Image (cartoon, rainbow, N blue to C red; front, side):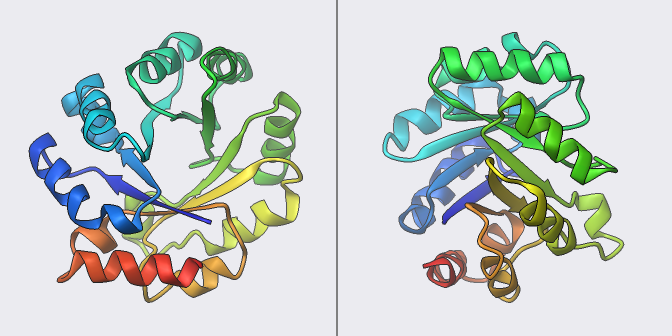
Length: 208
């Protein structure tokens, strides 16, 4: 089980310094969507340069131009790129082709997918690598959690690896670990913690 650190709200220099503090406990570094919008491929390249032994995910949330946009991230050094599960199937197929051509992986973010069971079946028919349960920040603000969607995902996904994100912390990690996703994604619980290193360690230890 891998721990993915989601970086969204920092500038590049601060993000690099912060990641260096917690890197011992992190498997995947996520260049979050706001970060991608602010810094672009520069962030991917710099994190690849400073953390050559870590996997890097570009949270592009691709909606169109699947092959081109995924290729852009892979060629900058990303190991994973994300595409929205509500995208057209042709867009997802094109992004997956890019992943295959670059020997990388494609993550399908299932945020806002209404019929998870049907969409999971289609994504697995297409052959995607990873399906991500994602309760967004706006949904978290009204009290939603990703645990129910993770249960649906685990019950219906037969081939894909599963990632989960949405307000997870050391206080809630145990119930997610019990469902055995391949990747747990944590952002604010770590970088807003009083002791980020201790929080990252506690989450990672719970996953072992």
